[in-house]
Every structure is written in C-alpha cells, then in structure tokens.
Image: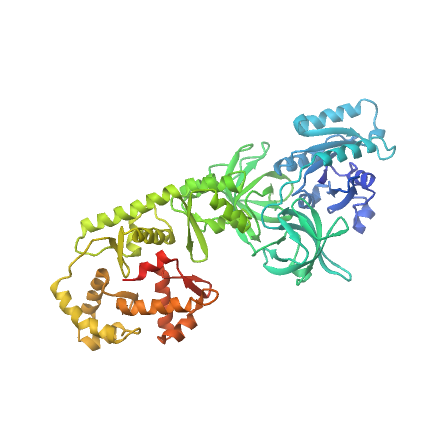
Length: 632
C-alpha cells in the first residue's frame, strides 16, 4: 500500500514519516539545511507478514505544490498532517482538495505537536479537520507528538491495520509507470523512480519512453531497495534503464509497454471549485497529470464552466504528453498560485475533425467508469463506426483485453489500413439494408447505368460510414448473391443494361488495342493514336465503358480490360503465398514487369477494391469475400 502525506508546511510530515519508518525523506542538501521539504521523498516500513508500506512524503509549502502533485498521482491512502498549534492552514485545505479531485477516498489524520498546546486545543483542531474533510472520508484521527512519542505506536498500528485491509487493484492493461525522478547512479547508469499505474513488467522487457518514443530495456527493477523480478500496478519502484541517456527521460514521462503515445490535446470532464470565478473559454492554466506539469489552454465545449459545476473541455497543451482515458488531473491558475479545479480525461486521442454534436456525443459515450462500459456506450452511439484500435490505445488495453471486449459484444470489426473499425451489430444490419436500398433507388432513377462505384455508393449512405465497413458490407452481400460487381461498379444482382449501338461499335475498335497490351495496356493518348478516336470522345466513351464494367480505370490515363486485371490479381495471390503471407511492391513489379509507377497504381487500385490490404510497405490478400469484389 502506498501512503502520501499531505498538509501545511512545518506541520511535521517528514518527522512523522521518520518516526514511523526510520527513514529521513529529506534527501537534498538544501532540504536538510533549511529544514524544509522541497521535493517528494520516499520511505517504507516492512510489516510482520513481509509486505511493505510505502510512504510518499510531499512538500507542504505553497511554492512546491507542483512537486507535491508529482507525488500523489497514484496513491492508495493519504495521511493528512495538521499541527495542533496552527490547526487547519491554507495548504491543508489545498492538499485535501487535491486529494479529493484525484479520487483518494481513504484519509487518516495525524494531529501533531500535541505537547505544545493547552488541554482542549486538540478537540478544536479535530473539529476543524472533520469540518474540512467530512467524517465519511476519515478512517481515524490520531493525536501525536514526536517529542514525547505519544500516539506514534497507535498511528503505526492503525496504518498496519489499514494495509492489512487494503486490496490491491488488478494489474490490468499495458504496463505504464509515471516517472517522478530520473538520475544517473554511479556504476549503474540511468535510473528512474515512480508509480506503476497499470499492468505488469519484468526485468529484461522492452519498453518505450513516452511521449518521446525512445526505446529502452528494463535492465533491473527494485521495490523499496529490494531487487525484484517484476513490478505491477500499485507498486512504487525504481527501474534501471538500458539503451537510453539521461537526456532521453525526465519527470513527467512514462515508461510504457508497446508503442509510444503522444497527444497535444485531451478532451476532459472538468470540475471547477465553488470558490472560483466562472472559467472563460481559452483560459490559460497549468495542468498537472501523472507526474507531469505543463501549461495549457482550456477550450470549453459545453457552455460555461460554472463554479462548483462540471463541464466538458478540450485542453490544448503547449507540448506533447502521454495520456490515457480515465486519468485524473489538476488545474492551477495561470500564475500557478492556486488550484482552481480538476477532473478526468475522457478522450486522450480525440479525432482531428468532428462537428460539435458528434464530438459531444462521443464524449458522452466515453464518460464511463471503465473500458467495458465505454465500449458498450460507443457501440450504441457511433452510428458510423469508430476506430477500435484508437479506443484500445486510449484505454491502455492489452491485445487479449481488446479481444475479450470484442467477444463480449455483438459487433462487426473491419480492417481499414492500419486500424480496425468497429460497428454495432444492429447498425451493421441497417448498413446492409441501406446499401441495397441505395442501389435499388439508383437503378430506378437511372436504369441505363449499371450501378454505382465505391465513392458513389458511399455518398448515398447517411450517415456516412468508414469505407472499410462499406466494402465489407458489399462483399457480404455479394457472397449472399444479393449484389453483383463489374470492376468498380456495384449493382443489384440481375440488373443489366444494354449499351447503345454506337458504343458497341466503338468498343470493337478499342477492345483489341487494350487487349494487345496484356498486363500493360496503352495509356489514353496512346489509345488515341492506335484507334484514331479523338481524345475527348475516347475519354467520354471509356467513362461509359467503366460504368458498364467493360474496363477498370486504374489511373486517370490508364484503363484495364477485366482479363488483364484478373491476371495481375493472380500474380498478387502467388506472391502472398509466402511464409508470412505478404509481399512488397518491388516483388510485384519484378513478377509483372509493368514498371514501378504502374505497379503502384495497380496495387493502390487493388487496395481500393479490397483485393489487397496494405500494412506499412507490404501487402497481403484481403479476406476471400473482399477479394471477389475486384473480379469480373
């Protein structure tokens, strides 16, 4: 269990921790010289059963609130220290407010310096404390004196009992640890300390420094000066990092499993203190999140931020940070003189563009206590699908946790470039019905046209959905025999059109020229020279021929007959029979001999009509239903 001290300067927090643990947490020479805690300090005490209680001792002076906030971001319990002679003071109030905003539910109170006051004064101070905190949040109030030793044994016993009752949170999610100190240890190298907020990590594992993206390895791990093989959520630990320099990591960074994460805007639920003035749009402020502190602008999204009320806001940050859904944060005023409020991150990776209504609906869905509840609400709210991989990243899910979410819900998931798009099953069925209805309406209005291409069909679907979902719906309907496809043109099964006699005559002149080129048919201007047909007339005709499924337009100046394109698709299939199931554009170029530029045009066309799927600089064949879309 991790316990943070809280309270006004010179109320005896450090002395109390030293009495409980035997450790002086004032490690800096300046702290020892001035008798004043400046930065966060750490100590621990072993329990009879072998477990450890860790203490985070924070500075009480107003000037060092930023350091206090770096230490209380992930604690299980708080020990509020109030001197009997002073009573509740300004930093006592601010620290308690901060603990409340950060969701620290369990507080114990130590009234110190009881030997310095007259009888009856302790009762007055206890009444002040209970009025500030409220009886419901206070586990115990214990009166102590460092000079006489009164109450120290009782406080130690109370803390031990609290630790025995403490149930550690499950170590779910990808490993991430908030760095509050980074330094060089002589003979060892770069060492960081901090609190583990999620997941489990073991010695030897690869990690990333976020948001910078530097790769590192956990060469060694220690918990309270003991070497350990692994650390988990809830632990305070030190990590010896290999592969990075001290300049690569700083307070506020994260040591995380998986790829780096960086954002310069977070959408949040914000609560302003009742004593504050209404918050104006674009107010500058200081943001404290994890062990990080930086400046930002508060952009309000849901009216005014009234004192004591909640509001939705976007925090525009002055530099990138790593952040995750559900994180608590604190806001201080522009001059960093007072705490004005705080809240919880709803969306750390918001879409770059979204209209106001959809943005608010998205945040309403994400305003949930955990990933499972947020996912269910997103499925209900996102009528055009949403980026599932972005959701999993925002909620810090491991891949098994992400797969478990999908398995627990009626959902359709579709690959779209380097992400997966999710859509609720009910909305999926509606989408399939919309596709059929849109094509039926098109056939009724324009019976002389074969159908719609992908862009035309996408434009007919409202609200619009991700193109990957639309391609998947078309593929399923084709597999069921409901739809047909010629090249890029999608139509209802059984719908046929007869080209005009003039077009049939022109096709007899154009088709042999295209076929003679094999897998590298002539360009548009080359066709003009071969057929003798004027450029404008030929281009207009090929547009009509594409609508009839006679040709595939690969690029503005290149049209393929179906047989040639089918030959290239079979080449792609052979290349994808490699052990890893993928191939590079250079492989396809060598196999086909069509040249680099045309290779790229053909492969991008195959991506568009779901014959292939691109992953970075390699491609694989799309699932079977998708591949059939491109064939005639």
